[in-house]
Image (cartoon, helix red, strand yellow):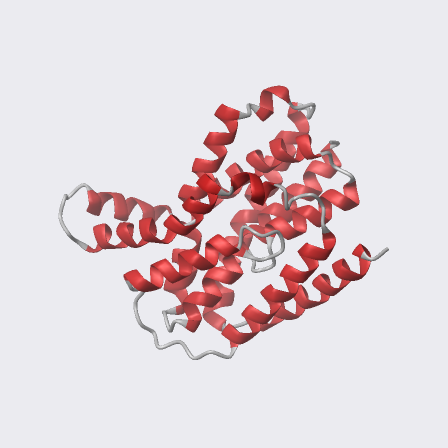
Length: 262
């Protein structure tokens, strides 16, 4: 992988991780266009996911610090309740990761037909949520589980994780800003856990043929673009502009499907 390829894929990861357009789908498309090998893609995925996790922590550092402060009071307070909701939300994707990891990984083979189909599904979900009327209610424990199930389905390449979770939360009638914040915070533990597992079980960074410089470029690109996209997405959800991303996913999905036929 060259540093130019790393820069492009890093920007794709950083932007598409937070915008509701599917980072997995866009990385699959980018991998096909740039002809990046699967072994290199695994290493790169770990690095850029680490970058987007860091950008999320920086954007929400005050919220995260307040949650930990509340937890160390050892009381059944708002922080404890919020943490329990996050834990509930990651159970579905945790089950997928533990029992169906190999089956999911087999889907990441540059299958543009699958990616295109899931992008169109993302477009439909975003369009429905765009016209739903939030009731401005707080996220409940049941809501957390349902949003978590949406996140579990989003392991499919092309089905946007942020789009699925935010859209689900909005359709459940939750507050817009609260849904966006919850969507970004709930993914931290699964990504960190998956990356640590890959590093210790596969040790891809040691075995990879990618040089240090492309990895650094990819990390920086994903980190900076992730910061921008994360802040941008919060404002987008507040202003209810998801319909534009629905149209984008529809167009890209159709292009991917047509491309898969040739």
